[in-house]
Length: 287
Ligand code: PAF
Image (cartoon, rainbow, N blue to C red; front, side, top):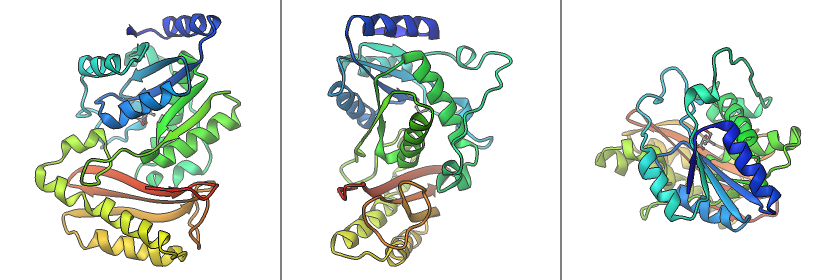
């Protein structure tokens, strides 16, 4: 596996691979890889001849009081895992390469970034759309794979790539969970064992809502109320939001059905965790 630190070198590698007739799939990450990321790599391989991954902890998507400085970084371990999973090239730029002196440009997807996560993290998605744009220009992928755990991110990126004619297909892969149901996340490693146990209130609440939907409940307000009560019954967890929204507008829905995302975020100590379930436009449901 090649490790490529420079944008132009990455572009040259991709252009040459495509000239040779290869389709390129891309998995962008911030490193601190776990099985959830590696499953995205497996999914990427099903869509292309060559898989490129990136590791870059993007300062632009962290707010001033967030965990940018303490975000776990271990490029060597990440590279070994990606290599073992058959990744052809790892793009690992540095901060100055991505944001050189004088950098001014923003990429903003109207409205969608202000909902759900955007309440507590108002600048977060502008940072994500900016870096994903830059990563896509470096890697020039035919297809890119994102995790459903970050459903709002996937929805915003899909909107951006359609609005701006990127020509990159966006695949959203199912959430990978620990044995006890906690969604895999690089931030899980911040949790003490007591916090880890408390954190299960989030998947427990979402699962109860998901099962109610499967049992025929369609009243979104009733399901959200039930999920909220389950989280609030765990005193070691602080609820940020839990809601059922449209996957198109991210506005709250009245009835659960095709195109519904039920998403929640909690703080456990200072660690922020997300989880969700959704029903796609064809009515397939997945938690
Ligand atoms: O999901 C992530 O890890 C990040 O938001 C992404 C897409 C790699 C952009 O930095």
